[in-house]
Amino acid sequence: MDIKQIDYKTAMDVIVEKHYLHRKCSCSIAFGLFNDNDLVGVIVFGKPSSYTLCNGIAGKEESKNVIEFSRLWVSDSMPKNTESWFVSRAIKQCPFEIIVSFADTEQGHIGYIYQATNWLYCGESKKQKYFRLKDNSNNEGGTEYRRRERMPRARIVEKYGEEYVEEYYSSLKHRYIYFNARRKRKKELLSKLKYDILPYPKTSQI
Image (cartoon, rainbow, N blue to C red; front, side, top):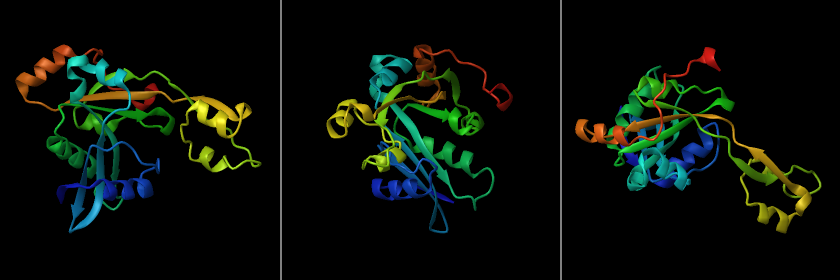
């Protein structure tokens, strides 16, 4: 198996079709897993949209050094340990030193792939409030609703009316952090970490 950097379009075509979220994401760099020239896995790293997150991990001075591990897909045809093998090697090729990722409790995810590749567990993220268009068969917004697209409140009001604004909160997510650096630099980043390092969560705790 080979790991190669792939372009945005290739990564997003696979992610939209095969990843369980079926939607695009921020992408600063992406890697493909190839088996006999067949693309059997994709990993996407993207810049987090939240400045609070970037600043909050190791301070504002390390903000530009933060990247989010935002998507992982591996074909079901691959052997059991392929995901962890792919993740550990893709990280080594990632040019950022601070990598953050989240395991969505709403999907029943614990983050075992991060545990298997020695990430730091830093607790659960806070719920965030978002807006979306209420599903209503009498307006054209049903498609946007079904996509669960986060929309600015003002856009919904302007296009559909105040009565179609729906508030919702993001699910709790387990937060994992990886310092992609050599020993001395990793020690420095650890000293800057703003979160507590906690024991890994298990299924029985959820």
